[in-house]
Image (cartoon, rainbow, N blue to C red):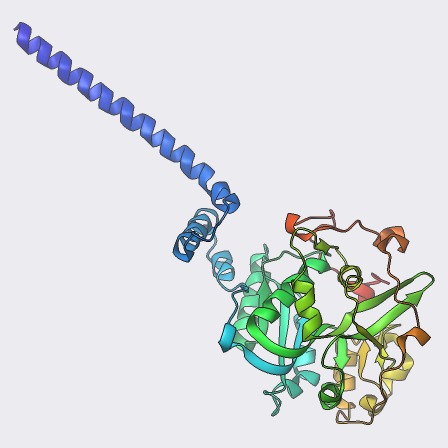
Length: 377
């Protein structure tokens, strides 16, 4: 009887020990799972970390945070990456990136039905045209709309960014993607309310400087000069110099035009081309001249502020083709090359911060409506 009692006690103690161990292990695993996403996100990578391990970590984090929303998960897998294609890069004379907000479908459609047609009418060896917008869209309806548009037209690229006014990060992502995917001679970054005489531009690009070129509309005010971000052409070497900056000292700014001028200040050899054939302001849609103009591309290379109706109107009256053009004027006759971000009025004055820190300037995630809604310079 004594032996039987001892056996019962031993079995009971063994069962209790196993139960306590399993309970402790369960809570330990649960705690580890809760902590894992932030560990994966912040974990350093090294040359010895294999792509498989990295992708598994990313997939693990994605599964934890996004399994409750299949639409967001689908978007996650369609965002742009910066993997260099090497020898598989497509060679083009001109790469055009139209920067646009997800909700701007009508503007994109107006572009598709006007000057965008010249992107594919026998010019494939010369030009590639893409829309680039923010891909981290929290509104499910808007997210599905942009995914459907992307699938239908095959010309929309999604950045790993939310909406808002931090245009400097957008530009940095755009040029990183461009350099990784294309061998371009020139890159044009343009707004979605810009009417472009694309055939005229393509006809003269081969005769423009192949290096050091910075082409657009420049603002020249007392003590400061800056390039407007609505239309910016850069030769490939300028883009590569931007990307070759030291990661520890590269500065970002919420406004891309100021960020770019900060970067250009460190480049000694550059050719500034202030093109008077670019109509900048007031918006073309509120200028009487553009409501009854004929053959707009005879006089202009592009027009800013061409909202939807005006975009269609100009598209019907473009007469876009090769034209005569003059040499690049001496920039010193127009303005100096000085730039100081501290000179801007308070509403545009923000302190540049290291890009590596993913800085924010508390500008929110609301869409920038621009001059059409009374915003902007």
